[in-house]
Image (cartoon, rainbow, N blue to C red; front, side, top):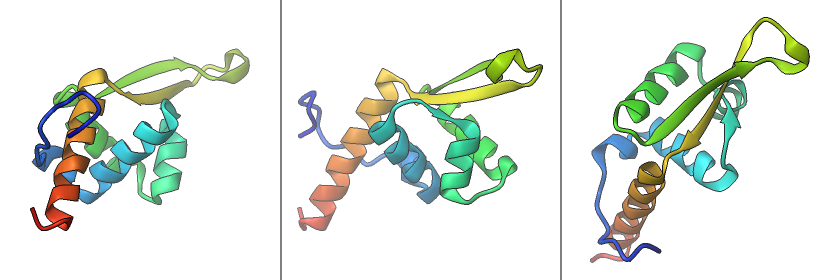
Length: 103
């Protein structure tokens, strides 16, 4: 069971390796900058964007664009799990634990 007493549910959207790692990082560290997430995963901008778009389409993450440090003209994208995303990730992890335990 997860902390919210949900049944473990295998989630095909989250299970894709990069998306699973994204959710794991966000679950552990909270809000992360796009570039830090991309560099941590050692993937391209396009690959990171594609996977974030999929997660956002399922309301699992929230993307916020904010002005760069010191009022710079560029925008910085911040990524965080939504409440639904956190619950879906934790439920998926619980399902994986059941699989590993042979249940």
